[in-house]
Length: 391
Image (cartoon, rainbow, N blue to C red):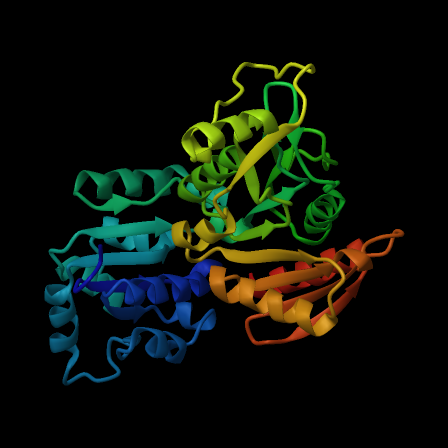
């Protein structure tokens, strides 16, 4: 989609400035050439050197750092751009452009470019809903500027998604295949986030019968099977700016393909030599008179694998549960999960360490650091401590 495109990214001074790192990495991965212009205030949140390393190009900050080249730089970038993104876009930069003010490198280049310009507003709700800001957005929209939204407050105040409990897959309309997950860890994490972080909203995706937190800041989304979970996760990631996704839900690895009996399987093989032509049992409820039932399962999609594809800047925490393995093997498998799904952290558990009221877990991050947590409260606190750092 972005292959061979020249994309200029303007970074302004908001708490969400750090998220541009993920955006640049994603665009580079997709084959785009990325140039970055930073305001002076944005350098208080993230360094130009970081963005130079990620983009592979010199980052421009000060309009007068090289006065003999200034005209070349702002005009050349304005002409070079196929697409111009302002991420995050503060009320200040929106107001400047709406008023025709060009007093720094970013605002000057925006005014000079003929490329499509897209603003991604990031500010608290009060600022975003201010009539002056709304009027500026309307004015710029009238002139053809684009806005990704509504995003007010999400980047600054934090929207999180937490999965809890376990999914279940129907055999018929009455019977299901499920697992023993209680959702207690997910509930503990959600409550700890609310206790430790101000101005946060949580989407709590869970099964119907799982443990649920109780707060006005939490929106409960009940799901049943993996397909239902996948649809809700994709919708959230595409329609809200999710800062952190804690994927602690125990997701079914298999769902029902069809149901038959052992006798029907034998008959099919004897008559055709092909199990795929077996007679299937249909109906809303399988009769209890059926004997020697055979439930054929098929793999479910891996929901964790889509999260970074849909939302590259979301901080993703994956969970891995094994049973009866060594600590070294558990951590090794956790790292594989991290690398395969681009997780930022993985919580690795062994079922033998969860029984009898205990819960020992190993928290693994992308820098290969491993910390041990003892108990659900400790797991939640260590995760939230990391979230605070990432914010």
